Amino acid sequence: MNIGIILAIGAYSIWGFLPIYLKLIQDVPALQILVHRSIWSFIFLIFLISIRKDWSNFMLAIRDRKTILFGAIAGTLLATNWLIFIWAVNTGYIVESSLGYFINPLVSVLLGVFFLREKLRTIQWFAVGLAGVGVLYLTINYGNLPWIALALASSFGLYGLSKKTSSLDSIKGLTLETGVLFIPALAYLLFLDLKGISIFGHTSLSVDVLLIALGLVTALPLLLFGAAAQRINLSTLGLTQYIAPTCQFLIGVLIYHEPFSHDRLIGFVIIWLALIVFTSEGIAYRRRLTVPSY
Image 1 (cartoon, rainbow, N blue to C red):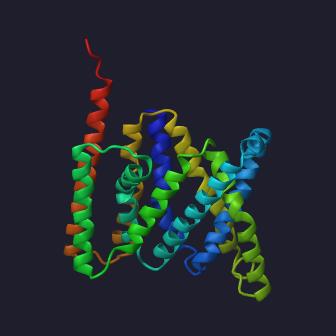
Image 2: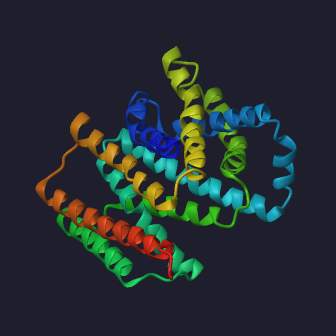
Image 3: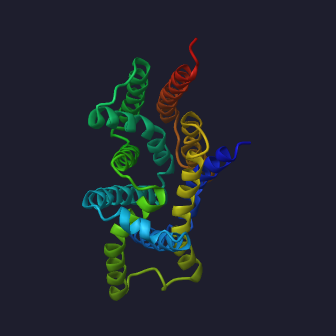
């Protein structure tokens, strides 16, 4: 098997099984988990840049004010996505969270249309419309929008859009984004400790280790993804992205036994069909472009 495919599967599998990791620390408030994820990710990435002896390139890359501004925007959007996901997982909404990452590619396409003036082909519009029907069906049957899924898809889609303007690679970009979050996260953690309500250092060693290891759990799949993107084509990479929400969906239903009614299944199936149409059309279109003409 191509090493790039193995790296991509590794990245999306880590993201897919993340709910199990978060469940191990579900007694820690979501905001505190977010704070630790930001702090330890930044520390791990600083260590990584030091190992690579890449400090001069990093400092040169972030001298531009526009780069810092968009890094701050991206960091805020990433923190929002993380917080919603952490809260959703630890309050029993893993299945709905998985829906957010299933529809994320379609949301990203729409953001490209509205903000980057990108054009959609007819079948792509059909797929987006079909997904909208699925969301509408779920809304009617549950009496309210699947807001967790939509919030996750929108925040991550906007995060991806903000990254479009960045000239930084994945390691430098994430270092800047977590660096922007580091000071307020550390200040909040110190405030909690002074108030005597911080979990870190006041419960068990295992919880402390799991909170610290969030830095590695956050950065490792991004490194694997970046390496995979350099080795395999976009169509293959696009197919592997569904590993993560599929794992999350199965974990929610089979391991944590979250409710999944017949009506909810119909809504998901409509959205899955939209993704099949969208992905198949994209693969076919890229193949047509690569066929040599004589």
